[in-house]
Image (tube, rainbow, N blue to C red; front, side, top):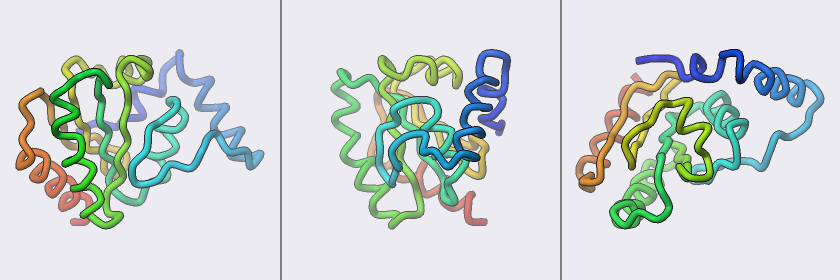
Amino acid sequence: MFKYNKFFNNQNTSGFLRSIKNNKKRGNKVNKQVNNSSNINNKYDLMRVIDNSEVPVVVEFQPSWDLPIKRYNPHLENVVKNHKGNLTLVKLDIDRDYDIVKRFKVLEFPTILGISKGNINSELKGKNLSNKDIQEFLNKLEDSHYK
């Protein structure tokens, strides 16, 4: 278990962390509001979602062109919806959001991270993810968050 902040709190990112704090002080919105299922437009959105979430955040790193992902993606979305607001789903396109992929050191696709209370406490990887694997992963994440 480790803090996601350590990936963002280095020399390369300290400037954008300051800009987020300055935007919050000024009352500026960094970007659009992100709800239970959303695509993140930049690393600012991701940090905002993780920092402001009172529920576990599921971050999915996916290539948009990969067929196995298209197979399990609807199931992942439905399971998150069935958790009735107790999970937040964030989808990241590995080609568009490459800087975030590098920061989290994601090497295998698809990768699903479970972030609870600012900590990455679980991950699920591989192209052969079954619906049962996804369901168990999300149930475990939710259970660990609310204990």
